Each structure stands twice: as structure tokens, then as C-alpha cells.
Image (tube, rainbow, N blue to C red):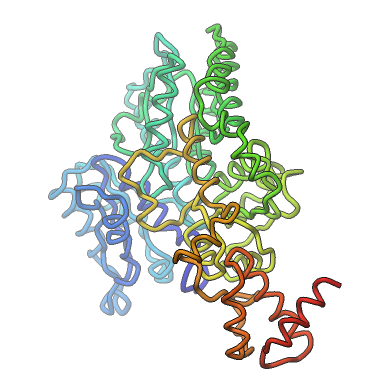
Length: 508
């Protein structure tokens, strides 16, 4: 737990609420002060759904702080049980309300005696885990609860479906292009003649969780949410799962070969090599683009990548292996995933960054001076300030990255979308210079080498005028070199002479 005015991953209760609100007919009760109840607004704004967010706040006010919750939490749970008739009510505290150290498990037990719905307390340490880890744990907890309940009631049917089938684990609210990714996976499985058994949690009922063991295998497309559930089903029901993210041509082929390997091990002989070959050679626009002269223009370009573990690794692999772009450094804010992240990026970039400090990431970008950034909404803001183009490839994101049109990042269509994103993110040839001649976006000031440090340098009028004459695609770099030279020489006001001296110092 820490105090911050902006974070890549939110507090734990947000992860629990994302999972709870993804299921159909599940209601979440948040035991929290009013300042912690922004999830409803965030979800309603970003998800573009027509239904109300199924989250109620049991407000921790001054009376609760003074006298304890007493019957308040129990009353709120039983009230929602009668009003909404949910299958499950899940109670979650926040970091703030956890300070009260109330016996919330006892509240859940008492409420369950008066409710028709199941009542669960989110089994999450709100001080030690973030939003992603809490979402992963909450999904596993709900799946385990309903499978054990079905076993107790003798309702589990572990007999496999007649035809090969799969569970997709990791479709959930407020995720990056998630609905489009799941649609693309469904299309891919249809092409591979594999049936969809269950997709969880998005839009599914907890009553259907007892059907999970009927699938032949599971797919976990995102490391952040679903891995714990995949492991649970593997350990308890002997269900293999695939955790390869099918993002990009190479990784999609690897994903399909993993499916082929599992099916063959289950005595269902399948070969998808011809399908992979046809997609790669004749159908996929992304594969064709990687061999085209347009893609050759990207060879050797410098880029940096930052995001969650899944998307940062996948994007780095695409840039390096498929498009020939040099990734100077790649990073993630999922610091808990360090071992996997660093092993996946071995040999693909010069440096690996693990941090959740957006100021540090901004300063690293400013110092690196890449030709393109691929990151979250925060890196897009940094790119605008530095006049460096940025393609958004990972949450957290603004509403423009919850598109109405079909924009998957997974599968073969996702590879096409990513190729477009990459190509359009770079400023190629004389594009920026022509934009300046005819009026364009690149007339803004470019800041100094450190985003978090204030600059006390003053630019003289004649030096500013000279700077505006320089083509936009190199102007930022020249300005930063000049300011760096001025600081080294203890020059407070940058004049024309300073600019010329800086140029000579760079050329020597």
C-alpha cells in the first residue's frame, strides 16, 4: 500500500470488483469510505455497457469509525439479496476499511444464514497485492468455491465433451481490447474445429462453473488474470492449460502448435501445420507486410516498450522478431512477475525495466529518445510532451482504447491491427517536415531531458526563432542536446551562439 496520485495498477479491491462485475448475476458489496467507491463511475464510463454496475458501497462513515459497523454490512448484504436475487454476493474491504480490523468473515456467515444467495468474503491481502493479483486470486476463489460446492452436491460431470473443447479463462471487465480478443479467439477455435465449453468470467454465470472440467483443456491468454485458475484446474482436475499469448504471427503459430500437442497427447490426432502455413503465407496481411518494402523502412528504428507483463513481452517479440525494430528497453509495472518477464525478454532488448513509478519511466523515455513508444496511456502522455509518437498496447488506458469497432490484439486479425499500429506510430521519411510546411501537429515545444525535473534554462528570442526553422522530426533532439550542453557549461540563457557551440560539441 502506498500513497500516489496516479498508478499503473490500482488497489486490490478494484481487481476483486472487476471479476465480480464480470460474472452475470453476481453482486459485490464494497466495505469502504466514499473516496474508494470510484469503480462504478470508471466502469460505467469505459465499458460502454447498458446495465448498471452491480456494485454497492457499504459506507464507512464517522459513525462506523466511532462505533464499528455493527449490523450495517450484514443489512446491506441481505438487502441486496432480496432486491437483486443474485447467485453470489461477494464482500470486499479496501485498504482504508481494513484498518478497522473488523471480522468481515463473521459478517458474511451471518448474512448467509438470512440470504438465498451464496455469500463470500474476498480472500485477498489488501496491503500486499495490487489490482491484477487480487483479480487473479478472486477468480480462482470463486471457481474453487463452486466446484467444491458441486462436488459436495454430486453435480460435477467430469466426462469430457465428445468433440475437442476448450475453456477460455480471462475475459473480464476493464481489460485492454478484451472483448475483441475473446471474439478473435472464438473465431480461431472455430477454424481449428474446437468447441468452446465455457468462457469465464465475462458474461457467464457462476452456476456454469461446474461445467469447467468437461473441457479437454484450458487457455489463459493473459498472465495477469487466469493463471491461478488454470493451475487450480490442472492440479485438481488434471486439465492441461496453455499460457502462450497468441499475439503476433510467431506466437500465434506457437499457440496453435501447443493446442496440437495437447490434442495429440489426448489421442485426438490433429495437424494444424497446413493451417499455419496458409495463414502465414497467403492470408495474413501482417505476415505479408513484414516482408514488404514498407516494413524494411522500419528496420533499425529505435523503440521502447512498457506495459503489463503479457502485452509488453508480446509487443517486444513482435517488434524484434517480426518487424526488425530495435527495442532499447522493455519494462513492466508487474514487478511481482519479474522472473518470467526477464526470462521471456532475454536477448530481445538491451535492458529490462521493472517499476511502477511513472515518473521514472518518463525520464527513461526522455533520456533514451526513441523514435516510437509502445506503452500505456501514461506513456502516450509522455510521448505528447516529448513529441515522440506512441502506440497504446496495454492497460491502463483511456476510453479511446475501448473501441466500438473490431480491434483485437490476439490471433491473425490482431497481428494485422498491431502491424498497422506500429507502422502508423513511426514518423517516416519527410512526413513530419511536410506537416510543418503545410501546417501540422509538430509545432509544440519539446521539454528537456528529464520529465520530472524543472528546467531553469531560458531561451532567447533569436534562439527560439532558429529552433522553429529546424524540421520537426529532429527539432526535439537538437533542443535537448542544446539544453544538455548549456547545463554542462553552466549557461542560463540559450542564445544563437550557444546553439552553434552545442552543435560543434556534438560533432566533435
